[in-house]
Amino acid sequence: MADTYLGYKGRIAELLKNLGLDVGDRIRIVRGDRVFEGVLMPREKLYGDRPIIVVKLDNGYNVGVRIDDSTRIETISRKTRRETLKPKIVQRKDLPHVAFLSTGGTIVSKVDYETGAVKPALTVEELLEWVPEIRDIAYIDAKVILNVFSEDLTPSDWALMAEKAYHEFKEGKEGVVIAHGTDTMGYTAAALAFAIRRKPGPIVFVGAQRSSDRPSTDSAFNLKSAFLVAARADFAESVVVMHGETGDTYALVHRGVKVRKMHTSRRDAFQSINDLPIAKVYPDEKKIEIIGRVLHRRNKDEEPVLMNKFDDRVALVKFYPGMHADILEHIVDDGYHGIVIEGTGLGHIANRLIPIVKKAHKEGIPVVITSQCLFGRIDLYVYSTGRRLIEAGAIPGSDMLPETAYVKLSWILGSHTDDLDKVRELMLTDFEGEINPRLTVNLYPRWVI
Image (tube, rainbow, N blue to C red):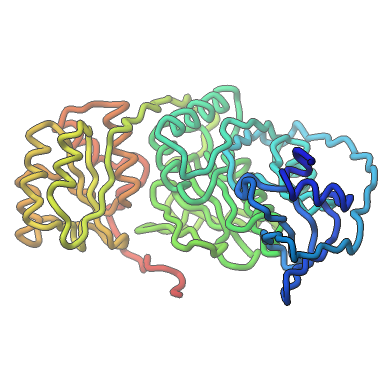
């Protein structure tokens, strides 16, 4: 029996080997009255040792088909095998030098057009072969610093990314692009906004909602936009650059402390909250149009300062009706150093929970109150519940996103102080535009599903 073949094991490996099939061959799988036709793909770890064959359908999606004794597999055509001599890619050293740091995610996966498989594009050569337009935007130095799902990132990973970006600036890079999974990109963008003070150029986070093997992929468009911002934008902030609408017209530059992923799958899923995007990017025209406020201008003579310590004993808790006090009590008693609570409306929680906030304050644990509403700001002085929270020692989070408040509290406790009065002062200090003092424009969502 075959051991491993094309990543498959056991009976499936033996079956594919006996049929002489290879990745990229076009096959038809018949199970009863169901027919699956497409390109044979290598086995992914997701499927383990289960009797499943992975096929890429004509619509671009992969499907795993369970194989049993009644299943029939037919070969439609063989992959065309061809030897190609790839031209040497020469970069222009007269262009702005930009670092490309990869942490994983859909954005760094490119399609192998001979097999249909998706694989990481992690070298400069692979990146420029995939998106050749970038070679006219910047001179790129690419490094892989992590290769993890964004949901697996921790504050220690934020510290590592900040350190790497800091050293790229110290080496003379004019901008840094960080490829990142979209699900927690807002957290990391906020973390690096705080962790590197006096940035000489932009730190640009970029991701993709659709993988490069799908017709609707946004990978190349987002990458072109991100490198354009890193190389030429006149601001020096930590930002997220993603599609601005469903088509390929423009991308938006969102301030890293004011952005949230607002949709699970739309290409324009990211939106600035309680703020306008900093700019629109038209990559085909190589044009950047400032449409919002710019807080820090690009200055190559600026000397960056690294403050990348984060306290990983900070909790982010969402209040809900019927929430039991023992949840907050456990966090306090378990030795957490800070708590951010997503309250309702103007920043309220149940009155029965307020004694726990007071207990945390007495034990030197800061409690920051934000709102689940996202748009608008909290005000703890309007109703009696809010005033009781103030009396209990709660820190109002103004119009900060809950996740930004969480990152900021972690950074303050890690890089600055654990003195309650000082923590309060720093939480109420606007460092990177996380607190917008005035909301004078319509900042509601662009679209409603």
